[in-house]
Length: 218
Image (tube, rainbow, N blue to C red; front, side, top):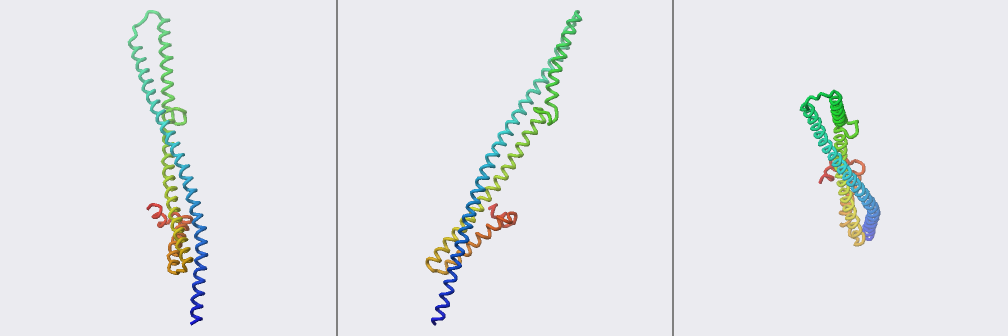
């Protein structure tokens, strides 16, 4: 009888010793998951600030594009007006006056055509319509990519928060089990803490698995 009691006592002592080690281990992991939550939160905030910068730049480039489109219409109107004015000019007897008017017309027309040529150049030419549209689209794509990355970081923050909660619950149950010497509370500690460890390992080493994808998407 005494031997049986002693054996049971040794089993309990061994069990609570394992619980103590387990609590220590998952406490360290809880600290780690908390640190990871903080790091991903900082990354998310940085990428969100960056995304706003890209959005503002994209808006600015589109505003410049619209302004240049308006200039294009104005230049074209000026060219049309010049052509109409030239056609409506009465013939002049003075050859020198005719040459002077012709020179003014050609000079003015050349100026507006030069402006239009620059506007219609390819994207390699600064302030051309193609160049402004390219810059606006590039910033828009960077903004959209930043939004996707920020969303991913947010999901990792939620996942690490979940891990931290699971580990803390595991620590709490294990601590109560050890203090109260209640073996039944130790098993939930192993289960909850073990699940937290499993999720942490999957997030850290296999973030593309279906389970992790489900956790991050929930």
